Length: 587
Image (tube, rainbow, N blue to C red; front, side, top):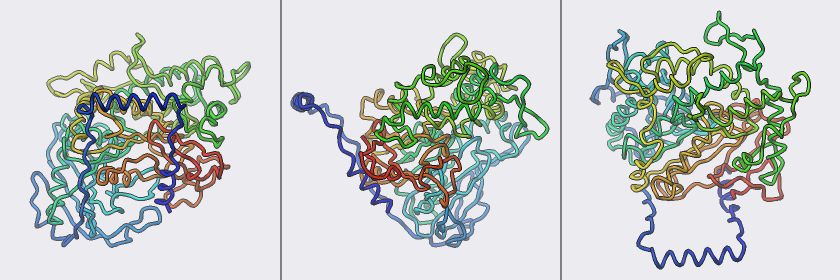
């Protein structure tokens, strides 16, 4: 059914009609270009050969049979079909291999290693998937290759051999592993560099052949890992699935602290909340500066201005870019004339909200992080948690222990923004690589180094929740634009971006957040079929992948929409149910 719906959506995608004179001018221009410059046309990137599968011959014997450099295989054990489930579906039979790479004693006296697990399906499809995990890593989460906002499917379910790792440190050391120089580097990029060739050798030993096609993907820091691999590992991967990438993580974390400092003067004096990381500690109640009720008010104002821009009033804003030009927080949100009551914003609140969405800047007015797009997902609980709680806990810890040289404690409400920026690029005798260098993919500002990937047929699919509160969807959109501008080649031949309206960080929000972008990526790499419209579903009551409790009561529990490749927008066809993706086209 899902494939049929996606085919119908593709068939429904019709080009926007042009006026006759514009059509004629376009035809004449194209003919002139063909006659004069046909030898200068940019060749289409090749289509890579499709992967072919193999059968796993043995499992438990792998530990004794394989001798991999700098690697200790701890165990290999068969897992029966159905012993694990993803949603309501049984995971196929596979072999679970656990091990460690580069075991060592750290400069802080602690034991370090790059811990990993690989799951090798008995019926292998010939493909390898590197599962990039989120946050600060530190745990080997099950290598299922889960995708989207809920476990609709996964790479292991589809027959991939999948690896997952802790990126070189274990949970009890998080986030203070960042004080150990090599652990910093492993987390930043070296774990991916070390694990990739080892995993391919392990696959070779298990199946008698290496992977024909290799893919890497993840959301948040996992999306950053995928972008790091694209920039640093040359031809190691054929496809990159990049979700909500924190590819400029140091700047994004500092932008959170900058935002906290903007909200602080509006917070209720003396109001505190419990510190979720310290049962005996408290935090300033920053959410009192912009309450859930007030966020709902802004969301309603956004819908009033932008909901119908896609042809349907359905509680979603699909036309994100058009909405940014139309919505004005100063004019479109009611101004409080008396006490705050949740149905209005004070002039001070409006000024701070506009500043935060415009992007963080130094006291001298220099922007250092992207703007955030306005979206009704601002009402999501995840949005508030990132802005008002994590900005006081996670972001200061990461700034102080991982991204700054020298490391040191950070007071998020008093930290000097300009001085902190300077510490990102600093080095010393202990930390010989800066926090910026180890975290950010080389060439992120001018990604010309990705041209060779395009030329050999590799592909990249990016997705981002438009209402992501920590990593800006606008930052990702601008990066995709830079790919085409700096390489001089069509960005859509190599990288396609799928904004997810209403979605918060990697999932949830007022959105259809359950989708599979890995299958379209494989089809693009191995069949040359570029993705344009991908089916996404809401996770309402009864959803086997878990329920999104924030869905509006008037949505169908199974609402579907097409995720549309930027710059196209999911637009209502004018008839049919507003709950059904088949009644929308990407235009």
